[in-house]
Amino acid sequence: MSRKIPMLQALNCFEAAARHQSYTHAARELALTQSAVSRQISSLESFLGVQLFQRTRHGVLLTSAGAAYARQIAARLDGLERDTLDTMARQGGGGALQLASVPTFATRWLMPRLASFASEQPDVVVHIDAYTKPFMFADTEYDGALYAGTPEQLARWPGTRATLLMHEEIVPVASPRLLAARSHWQPQHLLALTLLQQSTRPGAWRQWFDAMQVDGEGARYGARYELFSMLAMAAVQGQGVVLLPRMLVEAELARGELRIVCERPLRGQRAYYLITPEAAHEKAALQQFRLWLQGVAA
Image 1 (cartoon, helix red, strand yellow):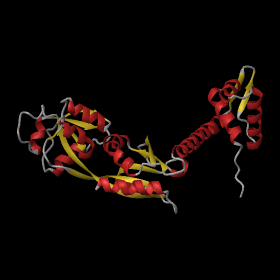
Image 2: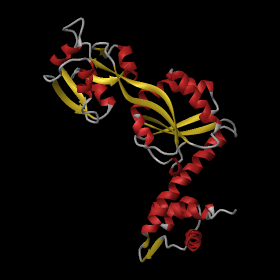
Image 3: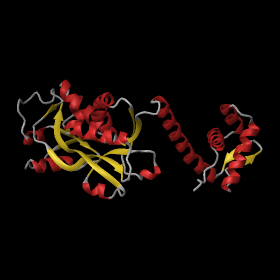
Image 4: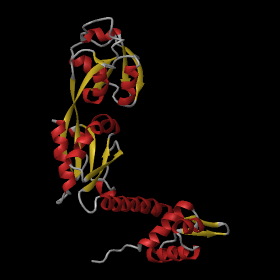
């Protein structure tokens, strides 16, 4: 069955003209004449049966349909260029993975370990974009997603396969300077310290105190921060005690910038997963990445 796809030259001309809002600038970028760009876009409009540009006395303007089509085409041309460059760089061998990931997990846990994957699979390149919410794989170029969530949240992500990597273990951490008053801290002692909060998890401290069987009614709550990285930095600066997944502050613990206040972790329902589309055929590079992830996560 033949595909209903315009000629690539016409799409290139349209994308450049839409980006510049000018046939002249598009022609200069593509090393074509202005009339050649105009002919390509006219042929594309005829193919689509849709007007993409309005011609004015001062040039051209995108129609609403043209603006929507330009956004879609730009993303697909970018993906086609990435795939082409990856194939050229690897001379047809190996492969490339396009991943979406929750940002703090990518920067604090995955990136420090990714060199070992590169040494094991030197012909596979891994591209990572920050993404925090579920999405439809069919609408993106992503091969997989690194996602933090609960089983209930995963159940609302249809058409996907979830590979469990690790559960989230939350521990209270603080600057050693802040903890110098005591050599040994019990959960109830934290009531005397300022407790920093994560704005997206307002009930975290209450859950932790409940799990420790401590009445947290008199707790001293401090500032709220949205990201784990913000909380970690605030704790390093001595602003207070924070609840963080242990794996996301490994570097600060190793450098002595943070200390676990008391070794009383809270294991919640949230866990970290590799999410992939349910497909009959999965590329070899993704299979290799999954096996490597499971190994290092274990």
